[in-house]
Length: 72
Image (spheres, rainbow, N blue to C red):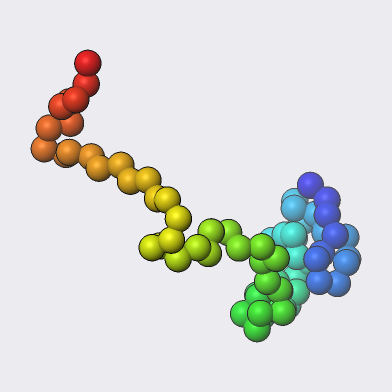
């Protein structure tokens, strides 16, 4: 599989580069550093940021003692 390194844009190949999709360990570590220093961020929240007490929440309670209770 061929791709371009996300850091330096050099062409990489999964069959040749063990740090694929990066071209080298240096670029892989630079990418990790970018995440650690929050240079990269996820643009939208993965979870709903609504407070737990607000809005309607549904819960399912499983009775592990009697797993077949309530079945028809």
